[in-house]
Image 1 (cartoon, helix red, strand yellow):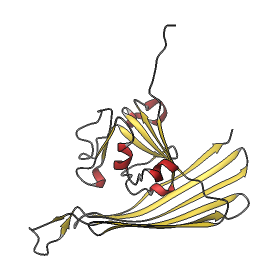
Image 2: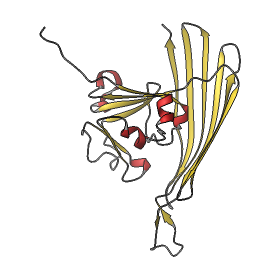
Image 3: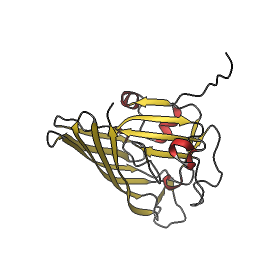
Image 4: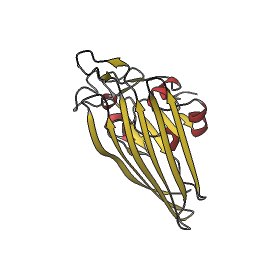
Length: 231
């Protein structure tokens, strides 16, 4: 047999693996995805994923330079940093290595990472999660989901995340801490499924980051509507 080519299969990490392996960020994801290295030397707003060693050295430091690895949520391009995404809302993560420009656009010459969010449950239920660690860090989230009508279901999630600074700024008389990260976010997911062959999904995530003593930003970072036909 001649003319046969082989290609690397995408890596898919399920919700169960995310929970069992305690994948809470892209840093954790890189530990289980061969060929993926994640760097955020200049903070969350300048993160730089590297796939198979391909990336621009200016990515994350120059706003006009892309990394070569693009983020997607439910197949829709996600601009900016992904660190504020609550991994508890993710059904699976797909790490696709190699050039993906034909399907995902020009900013994927190195690869693409697609986060597939969970559909809201049709039965009413809630979830409460609380974690604490060193450096006075904590991560708390609460969500409620359920069926709103026969064809419409939804979920709303609120999250508060704080990571204490590890270093003391001795140049500041107040002795402020450096390296701290704080995020407050609210996300909403709606799924409208009038028939077995049609599903409309909307996801909105609004968050506020406050990293370091002088870095504050408020953004409505991501919203999209996905329309799909079921097989």
